[in-house]
Length: 116
Image 1: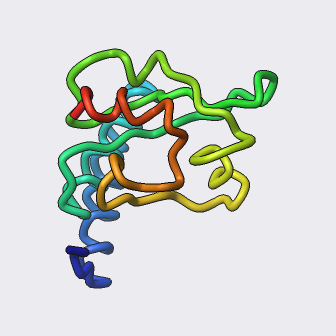
Image 2: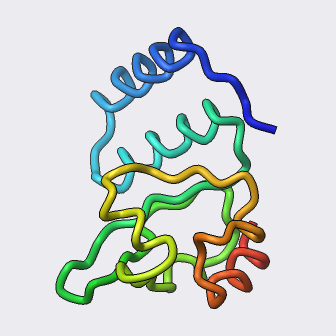
Image 3: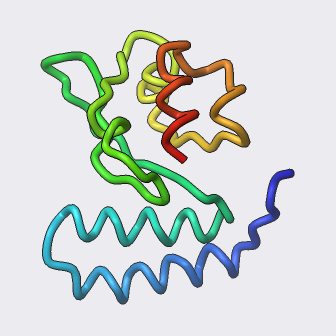
């Protein structure tokens, strides 16, 4: 079931993030803060921010929320197929269930199944 998010909820989250960002010290801390607020806003248990490695034509997971082990941070996602193709759209991605979402490469299912 998708959660309805009002404009006031988004404004409140942006306001909270803005005030907290004034206090962060590193890129990692800032991304963790943003991700935790976004996960709370969308009422999700887990999330991650992936960063592109253009020279390798892949993404790597930089920041996680609600994920227990390091396997996700070690994986690489090709920019030429599956979830990596979404990067070319410039938009984020929210999945109701990453274990059934057809946009993922099959090789990622086992990692997602054991992570969250």
